[in-house]
Amino acid sequence: MDTDLLKTFLEVSRTRHFGKAAENLYLTQSAVSARIRQLEALLNSPLFERTRHNIRLTSAGERLLPHAESILTALHRARQDVALHQTHQQQIAIGATANVWDILLQERVTALLATNSSRVLRAESLSAETLPRRLLERTLDLCVMFDPPKVDELACKAVKTIDMVLVTTEAKTSDWLPSEPDDNWIMIDWGTRFGSELARALPELPLPILQTNSLRIAMNALHQTNGCAYLPANVVASELERGELFIVDAAPVLERHIYAAWHQDSEYQTTLDELIAELRLQA
DNA sequence: AGAGTTCATGCCGTTGAGAT
DNA sequence: ATCTCAACGGCATGAACTCT
Image (tube, rainbow, N blue to C red; front, side, top):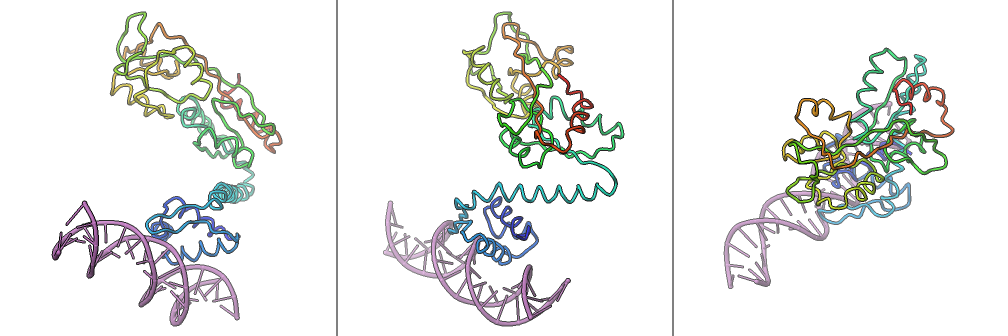
């Protein structure tokens, strides 16, 4: 199968528009139309429902989507691997959720690169749902995340424990807890387990004014709204010191474990062990 | 020669202005 | 408020062209 057909399929499914897809691919609309028709003939199944001003994926199209993505990612990786083989280098693909990159990995990966490691890294920020699938497809070698994947083929270990503290932008009394909408409670996605632990620990929490999986968005909103949020103690340490943030004494400190996961049959097992050590991800 | 692309055109649904 | 109709937008198709 020609990968151009898959690229075209992904672009049309992304833009939901033949003309826009054609523009993005530097083709004419009719070329895009022809490619999609060709792919549909190849798979013997319609991939899009064409109604005026509304292109929708059919169920066959929906099923093709993850396959198309992984085929193209795998091909891209294979090309890089072959190129790197000539220089005797290894490429390791690391995936993590946005907030794990923010609070832990970004800084460490940058530090690792600065040490002139012979490894070539590929860093991807992905949703928690996508990470295990990408390990199984072997388009990622190592994942770092809040919730351990429950898949037999994947090995997993807790590599870090982080203390989460409730902070506000203004000092509060010792018995204060957020309970009103005006308290501007900001909910950050620290994994499924955190959500249930939080509900148990603070059942009176109001509805969040913002829910996000990005630490940067949360921090911004926290300062803009004078709100409150559960954040990693290490991240807010300097702001606490400077008096820009305050710990809510009445709220419990919640521990979050961060897990590293990889494929049990990974060909890079030794390299991954070394990498976990170099990234200081030891429990 | 064959595959892929462009160009011109057709078909059909949507939109919006004007008439009733 | 509803209807009509022209203009527009968007996908499909076939002939011609280009490239390898």
